[in-house]
Image (tube, rainbow, N blue to C red):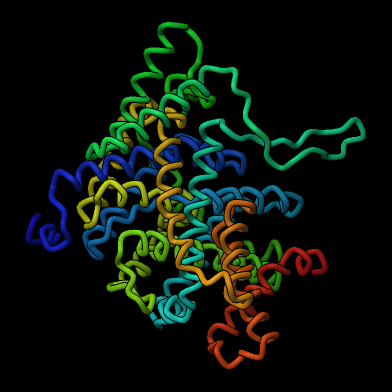
Length: 460
């Protein structure tokens, strides 16, 4: 392992990599249950979907570790799976099936793979100006922090429905600090911060384990639930059935063209592709900058290998019926624990594969136990904000849009879209259009189309 993963060269060791892998797995293990639950709304059977989720996440994460020697972990993406369900439900009148929606995922994954092999995806990443690369890192940090605050229950939606059916209230509000889950979250944050302040190695992992133990003790002492999500024992029985690969290639077809028409189908595939394309781009840049892999010109070694694996993961996710798999921002938790090599990814991948048979164990850790780790990782990633030149409007405003639109719109891609479009426009307005490469203009135009897709679909 020392020779294959070059651990000493990377300033790490086997113990650190194992702990980093376990930390990453624990903060993203929720996907094992959440992904099948979301996909079930589109008609995907939950038991087989759980198996497909574990298989895709496990195999593609192991491939990432072996081929790239980076500690990135992959699993079905949360934004993509929800978009897939929305695609099926909004086109129910034409009989669009979940298998046909998986065909869309397969095709967008195939398209991204072609773009990587031709070098276009890597060229776009290299063309991103440093101010936006720093902003992407900070935006992902704020996004992770916001997810942590939400999972902990420290903040919640403030929107409510008026008697006339209209919505009112703020988008977010202070959580309700009167429950056991909040107590668990508060304990987890204080305990993890204490460990970090005392410079305890593996503080994020020990914080998760200690908070899980506290939640279990509290549950047995009070007889009340200590998490806002159901435990593994309370999950539907069909999720915990013996392994089945019933979704793998099950009826995968490309009937979306016949059901929606060629133009609408092409726009749908394009929107999924852009989301997948730039979600990964933001994650790789953000975590790479956090770990120190991105040089002063914004380039990262072996970037193409990372992008190839991620692109294949989207394709395989569609084929398996698990939705598009992508590189997870939660990988930052393992990087923060010292993970620097592909050994971290292999640990994560093996744990996902074990969960095919031991799924209930993954549900023991409540989201409140991992919330503190996400909050702290978000804080650490946000420190790159000092690298952004806010004193210039043509660099500062696009960076601000990039950072804020990620958590506010719950999408990395949306933040990048706002950043790219505003960047080229402000360069044009300030007479600096020549500083923008032709590739960046083309990407900004594609993002304008992406943002206008809802209006285009309505017209079509």
